[in-house]
Length: 223
Image (cartoon, rainbow, N blue to C red):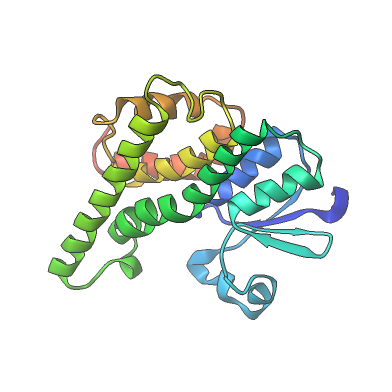
């Protein structure tokens, strides 16, 4: 592989998918290294030596290690001389990338979805667990309201034109599908997601996610 570019990622970690989409969209060759987070492979001494924050995705390139999806995408822009948008639009893109991988993923994933599907993120106390989900619901609704009204009102894409921000934010939003979330209160978001899902490589990168969503729907008797 050129320059020995490696991406440490996991099929169950949503922030990995925007990086994979960016690599494929820009025809950058790389070696994917799957890290099984369910087996705590991200906590091994070997991985912690590469990334003490034990987060995914992680890029390895020419002896450097870069974590966080937004930082990785910015690094790839420079390392492979990929043209950027105007300075004003690029700043807005960078802000959305940072928000998606940090705050949005925390609100949607760790505060709402993961406590419902992974016991280690919830609470054994039923009352505490309900309060956790209620708090998460409020966070999710606020985030979707922001996307619906601030970014998608009268627009097809978050910033008016399609950018990396669209598939980055969407990769986090679709995590809600794991709990059969209903987007009917956010029609702009729903329509935007359908557009994003038609982008090149989306289906390939999100195959594991889509398979899990399909299995959950079948178990719940939803077509």
